[in-house]
Amino acid sequence: MASSNAAKRIVFTGGSGKAGRHCIPYLLSKGHSVLNVDLVPLPHPRVHTLKADLTDAGQVFNALSSHFHLSHYENPRGPGGVGVERPDAVIHFAAYARNLLVPDSECFRGNVLSTYNVIEAACKLGIKKVIIASSETTYGVCFAQGDAAYHSFPLEEDYDNDPEDTYATSKLCGERCARSFARRFPGTDIYALRIGNVIEPHEYELNFPGYVSKPETRKRNAWSYIDARDLGQICDLGVQKDGLGFQVFNATNDTITTKETTAEILKRYAPNTPVTRDMGEFEAPLSNRKIREVLGFEDVHDWRKYVEV
Ligand SMILES: NC(=O)c1ccc[n+]([C@@H]2O[C@H](COP(=O)([O-])OP(=O)(O)OC[C@H]3O[C@@H](n4cnc5c(N)ncnc54)[C@H](O)[C@@H]3O)[C@@H](O)[C@H]2O)c1
Image (cartoon, rainbow, N blue to C red):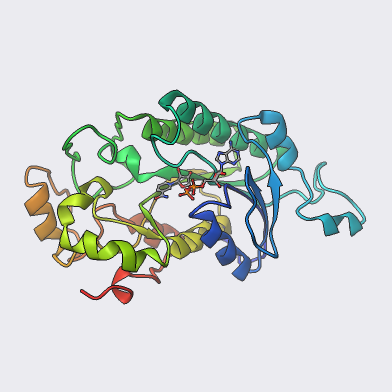
């Protein structure tokens, strides 16, 4: 396993969305160069958006072997071809980001096909690092009908994920594609991030008072969240950490989104769900232990910095 802090060339898909518009500036702040591939532009002076539909494999292969910017026509050699200006990493966030944006069958088609296409093209073009967006919803409660129970706490990466809804199932299929290609292409790292509820800076003031006063409404998110900027940190750590092959990582901040301790909340709202290890006093039930221990994640944007409790 190796880590390097070198500047990388990163293709980021879906970068115009809620998470990407914070993750991309974080990656730029770390010295990386980024090409955004999306259906709609990202208004950022240093990032070009290549408009592409990632459910079309031809467009994906082309996008991953593209110039990052018009100015790159000044370079002596163009992109594509073995060893020439290949991206170092692809971060694939483009998706229908929940159910009910489109009919279920289109959500499945769009998410599974785009994820398959991106992973396949990256592997076949020799790009050695792929990070894909999976989801907290794969733990099976977020979009379950009625009041469903988790199997156990904390929710960690070895859980037997068994969602019943289409969006979460599409994300689990993406994880399977990742695992399959990582096996077929030894030496390629594919990390799937099970991203928690993404919170943008302006959303603390808007949303957290309700989260804190009505904890019963947050069971579907396992009383956990990820700050969009801290998600950028996780992307950067994933890009820098080489040699892990296929991995799944929960991507959440350290602490539970309640005033009460984790033990109090789990006892009150999930009294029959087993707790399988000692948990920190305020540890997020969708635990980020693995990204802390394996990637070295350090929570910068704890919600308590932005909301009075
Ligand atoms: N927002 C959350 O709370 C959350 C939680 C868990 C996981 N995720 C996952 O994280 C990722 C980013 O989420 P987000 O909230 O930023 O989503 P978003 O909907 O805000 O952005 C998604 C972006 O993907 C683009 N896109 C969609 N289909 C495309 C296609 N076929 N080709 C090219 N671009 C396409 C859209 O134009 C959009 O800009 C998604 O994969 C989502 O499923 C999000």
